[in-house]
Length: 263
Image (tube, rainbow, N blue to C red; front, side, top):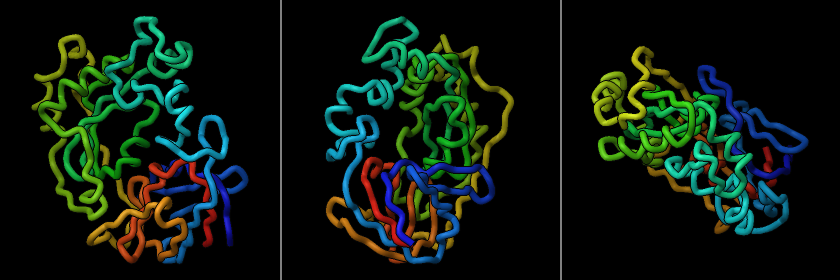
């Protein structure tokens, strides 16, 4: 069967294992049901996630014009410490920025390839951890806006990683650690204005991914260089499809590309 649509990050359900869905305008695919089946992926065009035009994707699913103009791609998205809505200061669209920035945010520790610190809106827990391929995670602080979460992340980055090694994550080259102990040890580095928001009593969240075979030497599929690919699906972790020949395909980094999926 052939499905055609624009790639957006897979929707998920927090079950054991995680359930994954690819959602197109007129169809959706329960990706877990495709394990051990051959999937063909063909690039047929582009569709900017903002303007909807058939333009080459620049970053984050947006064409170049939208990436530099639209509030959904502001610098504060990737660097929350740059948020200014709590001061009433506009970056690109103050109303949008207030809507997103002035809501509860979580600073967390996640263990995917290593222990890392991150920021997400409270409503995105545990989705954010699933998207990162973390097998365990825990909240450190819960704050009322994105700025406070951002300055906390910056303060902690000197003492814990803030990036995931995607190859190690996909190879399942991980070890269990005591995130409660990590959180306790990092408490002294939290900015003074955030200390009252420290989360004292909660437990680790554990996540299980539908993977039957981990890649030994993961090689990333680039649809710009190889617009047509087919392989047997052996797993799903984070936002990656894992194939039998060690090819891995990051759905999130290919948002905005229009594909034909032959399943």
